[in-house]
Length: 200
Image (cartoon, rainbow, N blue to C red; front, side):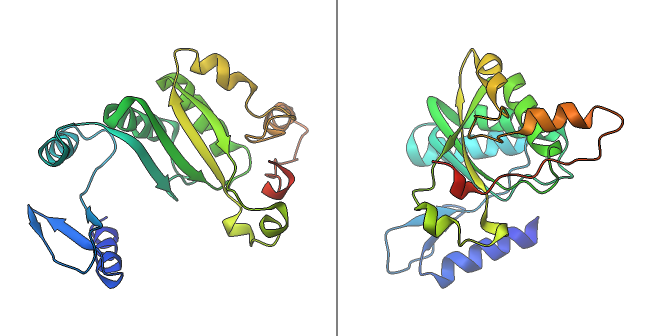
């Protein structure tokens, strides 16, 4: 979305950060800089462009850490999630980490798709505590009640992800039970994500 990219540029400039654009750097009073580029998940041409930029600026075409927030919605299909994780896989170093801030917006549906996509692309999912105390977390509004998920490559990802959604798991607790009930024709009950203040 070109409007979203432009908004990113404006936000960086308003905060006095340097933006690199086509090898020219806008000077600002700090040493922090960013480069804002379009990357459609799975788009080979755009991925090659990003790899070239990374290699030119760092000498590597992969990174240690990728961070994302507010990028998965109820309309995001399993296939799109697979393309997202394949793109992440391409840009992460072998022991790199993908951190995703994820808010559940449609009950059990999108969490189930996310787990399936991660398992099929070789990423094990775990949860990272936000560092906030339970008292502070309990005061957050519902829109901020998201989980910080950590994705790491693992040859046993599908096996490791099998426990996700169990009642005693901090990643989507109770999800499996709700899916099982939902598959019964008579069930109308929907999974509601627990308050993160109850965990960790």
